[in-house]
Length: 400
Image (cartoon, rainbow, N blue to C red; front, side, top):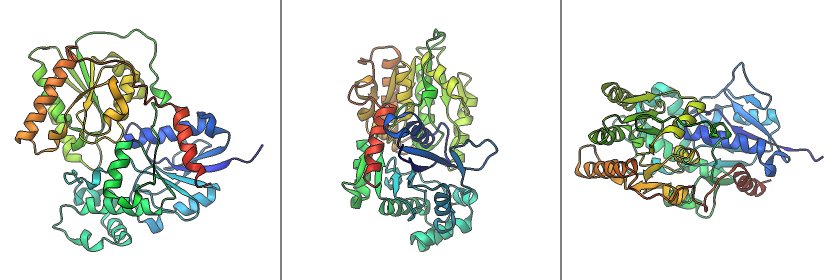
């Protein structure tokens, strides 16, 4: 039998976030896809721990570090990699093996991008590290401008630019994201390959009876401004005039980049005894919530793919999501939609209030089952481990 090619994947971010879910898709594809598992040997580059598996290799580097001193090239040599997959913008480029880079959306280029503050970033990654990274990327003077409110956004944008330039192939998660990325990175036109991720086997619905009680709405996302948990709480509170026993369950933890927003969500949940905030829910609990909820709602204004809604649909839940990003492409006629664009406006503005009214109205119709939904996942997009594996193989074959 021919020797399998070693493919290394940056797997430092695993878990329930979008990047974590995507990384999980990559790992499962190499294990279970017929197109991949007989031709490739997977090595996961992970943070060192005492419980590492045989397919994992320790790569002790912070998520954000200077690209010249992160040890990635040596790690790839150590494992004998023939190809490297970088599932995000911050993963440094390499010149020792071909590189496939995945970018999920172009949100850091949006004019209203809710950029993390410089102080938060410096606390997380270190002022000297970020200055060194800015110097490597050619944005040192902009980073040193302490009055700039866009220093972090500029740094991230430059990582997008350098990361896409250095990649042998580029992948993304939807045609919406591919188009949006080309808008801000025109030099990448014609280079994007779309591979729709799939729902992990750890979230496979069971056949156990679904308990029913008070009406329940769930939202699943990490706590950051673009996900709009506060708007969802506001709209759900208005629904309680018709459904006084309504419960809202928010699933998702804080992100280190937006601690103040996470605190505001926690405070809002504590003030409302009908709101439950689960910051660390297991996949088993999440699967049960999907199956037992009356409605899944995402008030997010920026989604390159939207894993939670797809997970909810596959569990049989009714789904309401925004219509202005990738959701219609991914969910098709299986979901209901509302126009979320006004939620990007300043809270309290006329545009924001109008969008909040629209969200409330759509939730009311969906919860009362007055909004028609064809049901089932759209036949034009039915991502599975095999379809994802086939798409990934097509990209890798271009560089091997």
